[in-house]
Structures are given as structure tokens and as C-alpha cells.
Amino acid sequence: MQIVSRTVRPSAGAPIYVYREVFTLKSYGSKIAPFVREKLAEAASYRVNGETALEFGCLEDAHVLGQESTIWHTRVHIEMMLWGARNSSLSEVSGQLLRIVGALTKTAVGFVPEGNTGGSNVSPFRPMPIRADLEQTISHVRASDY
Image 1 (cartoon, rainbow, N blue to C red):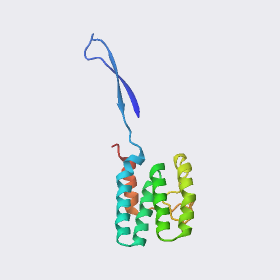
Image 2: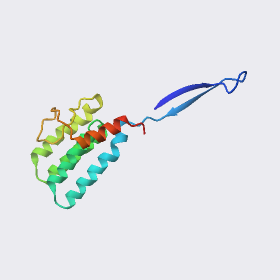
Image 3: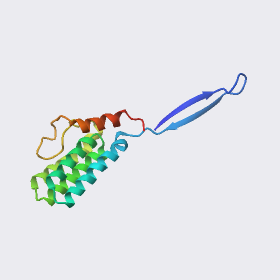
Image 4: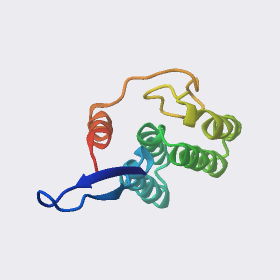
């Protein structure tokens, strides 16, 4: 939230009024939310159809989009852990448990490797290139004032 004080003198000789305007500046997390939710919904539709590889791909996309937000970063890792449990992948479940702790404790201080897809098949510290469509969404959200 940002508070701005303004001084107004309607006309010469009139009293000066000071008022405050309060602006709510949305965080990255709230601005990226619709895009992350869209990817999570897409993942759910693939899950219903038994398309586990496509489901996980959507979770990876959601991770790339949401990794600068503690809430979304953690939520996506939880979804990835649940994917691992449903698909009997002990390595994914254990890898995601570690990543959940990291997301909760490191995201807010900016310790996030850009573009990392979040699965246990990649190092949690490895930056990765961001696909053009995801980069466009991220750039749009970062530049927006809504």
C-alpha cells in the first residue's frame, strides 16, 4: 500500500487543504494469480484424462510463472508433490518436500533460480531458459499497474 499526501489550493486566497490518497499496489503474486490458476486448471484437466506427462508439464509452467510469489511457488510445489504421490514417484515426493521448505523460506528474499521448472528431475538451484510464451506473460505482469 502506498499513501500519497497532496496539497490543494482551489483558488488564490482560499484555504489550503491537505488530503491523502491511498493506492493499493498489487503484488506480483496477485497479478500473476490468474495465469498460474489457468495452468493449474489445465493440469487438473489432464489429470482427469490420465495424461500425467502433460499434467506435470502444466505444473512446470505454473512453477515458472509463480516462482517469484511465495504463495504460488509453495502451492505449485505442493501440487507437484501430490502428482508424485498419485504416480508412485518417491523421488518426486521427497524432492518436493525439500522444495516446499525452500519455497517457504527463500522465495521472499529472492533466492529463486529464474526459469527453473521445479521438478525433482532438475537441481533446485539451476537457472533455466524461460519459454517465450511464459516470458511474455511474466513481462506483461511485471509491467502492469493493475
